[in-house]
Image 1: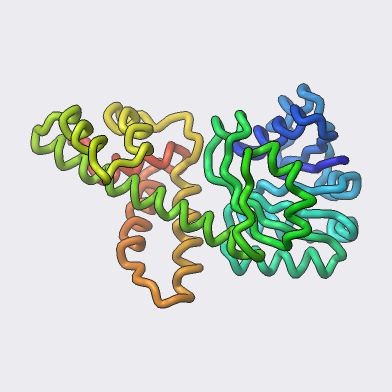
Image 2: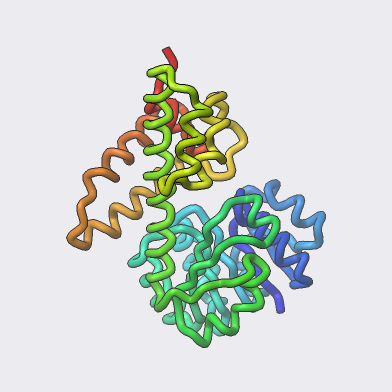
Length: 287
């Protein structure tokens, strides 16, 4: 089986490497070919165009930035003609209705589609320990399971197309809410002179604790947000996608809109490519 990975950025590259380690024949394409060079050294075949990769592959794995990029790459005049009989696994974070529209277009071209967004970051991707939340037809999911298990031990079929995307957005909304909530509490205790160690001791022994707090604590204390696994601009994008999806339902969104403003301010202040915990610098500014 030949698998084409379109998009070999922060997450696409380790996914492609996992497929190589699982003895699949892997073709890769990226807008910036240099980013795929380590994969070529690991045994992947670099394709000059997305159309070339799709034409040669049996399965296409998408890890592209957003739905606009997916449409431009997958449904271009050069590429769409090769989708017949192919299976498309869409693994990026997009809005549920966007995923449903992609499913319709892939099926229109004679292909099959399943969404499989992931929870986890680069370390989990490298180790094959991502949490996969699939949405699609049961038969397609079953046929894709050997591939999906290269990325995570126990992929979950959430429901039809759109529901995997919805669960992924629900998880990333929690990332935004937990991180900004923790940053605000940390900022207050530090400003009031409360021992950070005492604050964390109480927090860790309470029902309020989440492991992400300890993962981001050192970054916030040192104000070092370099070398991100998940940059601020991506969290901002996902919050906006959540708001778009949630606005179709009778849900209260004022709190998340406030978080969106914090993320936007961070981007305006030059933090777009830093770790998303850089929102701490927006909430608790250095004086």
